[in-house]
Image (cartoon, rainbow over all chains, first blue to last red; front, side, top):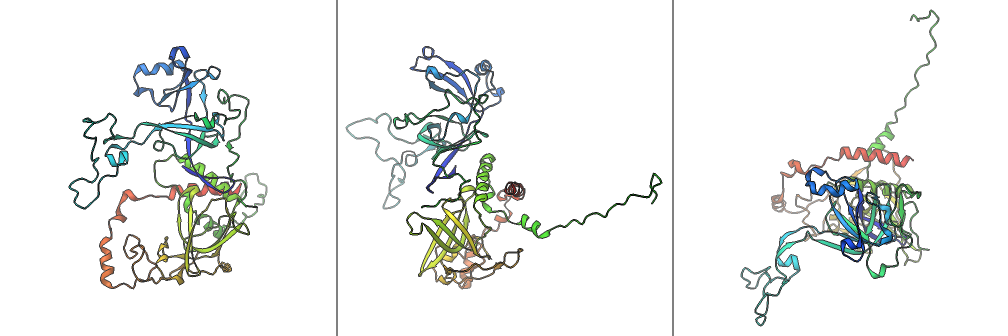
Amino acid sequence: MMPIWTKSGEKRAVTLLKVQDCHVLRYVSKEESGGKTAKLLVGGKNVSPFSKPESAHEIFKEAGVPQKQKVTTFNVTEDAIIKPGTPLYAAHFRPGQFVDVTAKTIGKGFQGVVKRWGFKGQPASHGQTKTHRRPGAISTNKAAKVYRGKKMPGKMGNIYRTSFGLKVWRINTKHDIIYVNGSVPGHTNCLVKVRDSKLPTYKDCNKNPPFPTFFADGDEELPEDLFDKEIFQFTDSSVTFA
Amino acid sequence: RVSSDGKPPKFQPPPKPVIIDRKTQKEERRFLSPEFIPPRGRTDPLKYYLERKDMIQRRKVFNIPEFYVGHVLAVTTADPYASDKSKRFVGICIQRGGKGLGATFVLRNVIEDQGVEICYELYSPRIQAIEVLKLEKRLDENLMYLRDALPEYSTFDVNMKPVPRMDHEDIPVNKLQVRMKPKPWSKRWERPKYNIKGIKFELPEHKMKAAQKWSQPWLEFDMLREYDTSKIEEKIRKELREELEK
């Protein structure tokens, strides 16, 4: 994470996400998948094929692409289908766009009720016998049972969570890095899924995105760094208020 | 000497004298701002490389002078609510923290009997000028104990003129021993973990001895805590030199 300053001198915190060896693996049509839209399978970081079983090699052999560590699905409309085997780059996103980021949260192991659910526990003194971080009562007398989903101690973390509506401030096309506003679930160097935001406030946000994606062998020559309009670029002189 | 052809030997001019400018060499080797050195961890070095590029870019446009803890600085920042749209604060630097773009330094001064500390970010675009008024290092790298010292040690004149620097060589070390207010202090500065050499402790002997109970003499021999930054520093210095010359 890194600080970033706007043109008015305010500081924002920003997370760096690297797009490492992303390729489209397979196209699944609407009828085949049984969903509402067609799907595209996309693979992430390269990994050695020897640690996976032979059955897992098939998709990657068809697409002509090395073995990937993670495979995710994206729901896509019919006009945005991409041929399997095309690489995806960070320039697929543009500064000023809004994005949802999904990742597995940091695993905390088996945790008690105070840390996992934020219960208040019991006082430290005034006669409490061996009861300081326990849940206390778990149901009423009339119910005569414990409801399903009762908050109790258990394994915490290591589940998929999404942060919605994160602004993209800057894109580095040379190293394929996306600078995304705020924090993102997961530990450093973990695998992350970045998707155009589904929030209704940001539906009409993206004007002229690279559609269906940014192709490296195309005609467009992008500069090394793409900045949002509101970012303070370090090539400018210090901020003054008129 | 006998030449191979029988002709007289060709005139060889004497070699030109190579002037080794030891002063500039010393300066080049000497100071690397502490926020350039990456902390020990498992982050990708690419992240530190990108941050360093931004920091160098900012340094090309705006001059950040070399300063240590103990220097007296004057900082002018932009402020939308001030009448002149800018604010100037003079103070002694008591702490330099943070790595990369988020590097900060804390300036302390006593204005009208009220101690004031302001934490500035080195790379914030609001900062319009940093002037070094007085150059002197102190015995410690963290002068937080000035909060519990007598206020005369933290007062600096707001309209102080910059003290001219004599040599381009060493920065003088001020071996001042500061006198403290009576206890209680904000931290127990007599304990060995703070390792403070700049306080004149007027505590009784038995209290100083009792404080030594918390000493950890094994820490300096702990090999897992060692973080040798010499090679990293060399690389970063070389990178800085190349980029700033462009």
